[in-house]
Image (cartoon, rainbow, N blue to C red; front, top):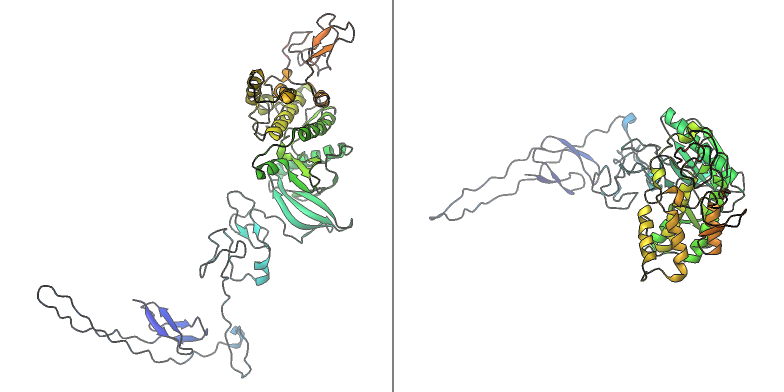
Length: 495
């Protein structure tokens, strides 16, 4: 049975274990030490029972309070924590108090808790009040997510490198304002450039402990910087200011974009679609970026176009494309072009050839069609299955698609085709039909004026080339025209 006694100094009651006799304790109220004296058990009266199993009556007498024990001698001077009092006596400082609520999530803490039961914030007795009041540093590891003190650089639970806390000065120039997001390659911060009038910038940080993997990721960072510099003339592409490499980390300094990505905007608005006219304007602007990338030698493929990577600015009209880290060129040699690329894609927005690791410029047109479909309907695309669904709706006389919008969804259906040769051949063609607000189905031969189906590689009457040239045939090395499924010189199957 637990014992209830009173402190010999302040007379406050306290509860102790039943084996506490002869042990030294410190009062939780006045923090003075004392020795618990021996406690005699209370005498128990004899039980008397009547016939027939009558209940027993037990009489008890409270135990006499223990005699006050003399206070312990003060500790040596070198061990005193409270210092000398005014009257020359010494006082021992109370142990550090555990906070009553979590500094991270403000949830109530149990007495003596070492971690918050809600968010996992680690409570350390030696943590100062200033450290506990700082913004907690959440572990970016999705399997952990523990809140750490702002002064920690590694997670106390799993050891993962934590984001920089606010106020950190990088490279003696960029002051971290706050952590914005954490992705696959590292973290993104909002910072102010102290050497450029405190201009706000976005800093993409890459952290990697493995030297070999770091070299691979660093190439992605360098490529992203090069691509952004080549697209500086286009208004919907963010500016790149600098790329700083230091040890096993790298920082890409970018223009800070005030806004929110289109996917979050839709999700926050119950997946309500955007106005079709606005989607068409955005599509034309994205076509300019894709056409510029695809016209490079060798062509550069974005590979991850989707609403998440498009930011709507504060004017609720203009957009900016972000995250060019997955873009890459298709190679210069036949061997490089035939080699399977790293499989980077988002399900629903990626065509079959990209899923197997062989993207090409028309793969971005597939992603563009999926993106416009999502923005115009509020429903995420399901790859070429969405094209089949649209085909059924367009052929239905009672289709729910308004007559004035049929051309738009037919354009979406064509570019979501499973066969790459059935899609538009370039972003330039997509933009032209978006401007004309119709789907081009026929073209005239410039030589004999014969009317041909659009995207036929050669005139059906005079064999005049009608489309742009393709890369050389992988078998014979000779040129063909886009839309050709087999080489006209050697008959080899073209991809």
